[in-house]
Length: 280
Length: 220
Image (cartoon, rainbow over all chains, first blue to last red):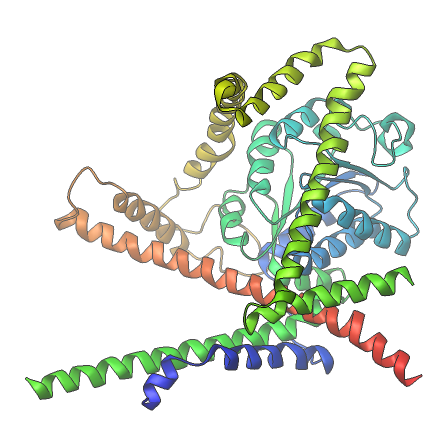
């Protein structure tokens, strides 16, 4: 096997080993990395920051534990911002498997800010139907969420007494691992004109950019880089900022492998061409 | 204590799944089956607790008899299991398709198609009208509008199959392919980023939540 052939067919176990090393070393030795705040993350931050204290904000958990590494730090950072601004948090979700996770995140951050359940935040959980739920919430939230996750009627919770539909909501912050973000935009923004910011996994981010360009959403937090940027903006470095160093080194390694693979491929093609010319 | 057991189970299952990177093995299979089983049980619980109880059983117990109609439609769906009476399930499917189509057609036009078309109707020269953020002037670059317009038009031409892709149409379609490839590249790059994030998340968990506390408890 020639050197070029070896370069174009690197053993996958070598790739796994090197990738593991570039991921583990920055985490163990806490190697810092520079976080650049993207314009889309800044716009999301500004959208939350513009809201006056006491404004209700909906957090929609549209992900499950499989997307936790990206969306948990993101949701935590935005929740910190919301509680810092004294906004009234309404937690809900369209992915049933995400509800226990968002409950943990909400309780952790609420405890950090000594927020009181029913006064500063509530958790209304999940109802099936996605688009239909969004439309009904535009008329009356109680028509779908008559009780919260603990079984309390919404009217018994002080912060919900004046909140009935989207016209009482300042912003929807939806965290997306799939296509639910599109449904939020199409139904909640399209029909009711409610302001939305989106936090997405990196896979979903390219699909969400057209909404940002058309100003259908107010901001976009994309992947772990977006989460790290938001942590920087709220001045509370946490998991995303720690993990970004590993992310950066892993990307460099992948770029190096792409270059090596391409050099090997083109050199092999060249060698084959020369060989053919020789035989002719 | 409960948390420690939870962390050990999670760490063990993570390592079992990672073992597939070497080759398929019984530990990987075990973890995979546990995942499928737990997910199925969780879905059953949620279907009962969030669909059937609040939407059917509770209203019936409160004598809201109207929910019998969707309840019967739901039960009709179950006839798909029996070949002889499977045709009955077509009725509730017809209702779902009709309602969903009515909702989707109107809402997609209002919330997706029209705003996206509006955002493509831009002046060729001059700053982009979409953004006016002083943080970076990348979005405001005068070339942005031109790129969006050329990209949209050439990509649409690429998907126009009523004429052969020759001459002017062929050339325009080739430009469209370049834009499509750039979009694929961006999507692929983001996908790589997402997958690496997941790996980092798991390794971060293994080091910080499992190995470090274990090491500390062994050394103290």
